[in-house]
Length: 338
Image (cartoon, rainbow, N blue to C red; front, top):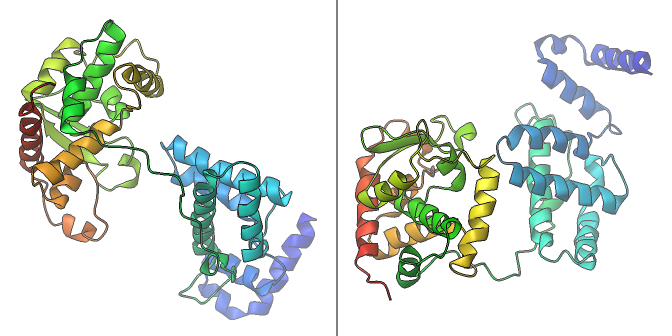
């Protein structure tokens, strides 16, 4: 079988003539695929390769995308799904099947993942500059992924709610630890649990680290420097580590650290989850302290795709984040506990 396949390939190359001398191996493969109308690449095989490559360090997102593909395979009763088999009709029936399976909340999530993967699938196999189009169909031009129908979960606290959390009298050490970590996240510009767990020890009154969520996808490795304000220092001193910001040796991993914190902070306020500290900081900065959206984005260590090129010309000025954070913390301290 392999010998026959190689023979077919060699004949196809011979048919293309002398121009193949200027083709790269990748382009040659695409041209041969394009010449064989029956040979359509396998969507499922591509997704395994793409998810492994694109979601390094983002296991939560990887699981969502894998689950979406697994559901599609189960629905179509196939382990191999060719590009031309994913049609508007199939997607419409798949949507109905998800709803009938009681996965109403997953409809938008899973179909959105399939749409993203199919886009990358076409970019991988189609060479638009050479006009070599292997995957001609694009069902998402006609099929529209449904928007989420569920009400968005509350993500931001009011000033009074955050103050009550800050001043909450805990009955045990575990709850007090969770409260302190939540407030420390807020005081450090919404630092997430992964970065709190991995953050190196501070130097010269600042913490400097690479944001774990995005460091593998950015040229600057998502580096950020934040001044430690007195509010944050008071908490750091309680749980100070030697080589790391905090002494968290009792936790096996940041995932365990994150799960335990999210469980314990609900003892302080029902419905509270750790990432609300980050959302609340950003909302206070923009809506209450008149910090510009650009400065909020910089403080959150986000990157503006529109201004990405411009940013390469400008050295970062960390004092912008320092001033924004001080404004937010002063705003919090202006409210007495009620």
